[in-house]
Length: 66
Image 1 (cartoon, rainbow, N blue to C red):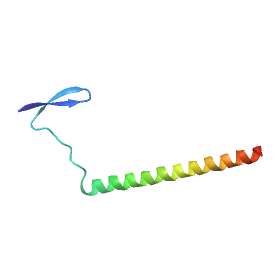
Image 2 (spheres, rainbow, N blue to C red; image 1 turned 45 degrees about the vertical axis):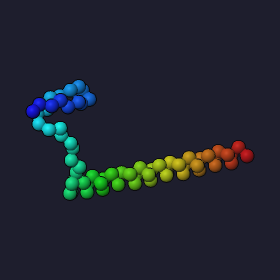
Image 3 (cartoon, helix red, strand yellow; image 1 turned 120 degrees about the vertical axis):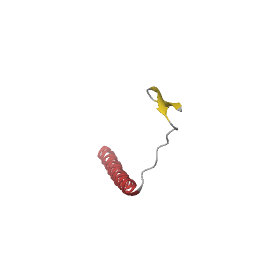
Image 4 (cartoon, one colour; image 1 turned 180 degrees about the horizontal axis):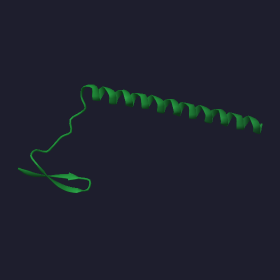
């Protein structure tokens, strides 16, 4: 049986059933999860540092004006 799949570049003819992506399992899921957790923590840490520096600079500029 021939079916049509919609993709971003147009329509493609696909033989067989509609395909559904499977979630990553085992070590792949573990390594992806660990990477995302690490990157998320790094991004959060960097964001906190930037906010803290912005706060410090704001306080210093207010103190200089007074």
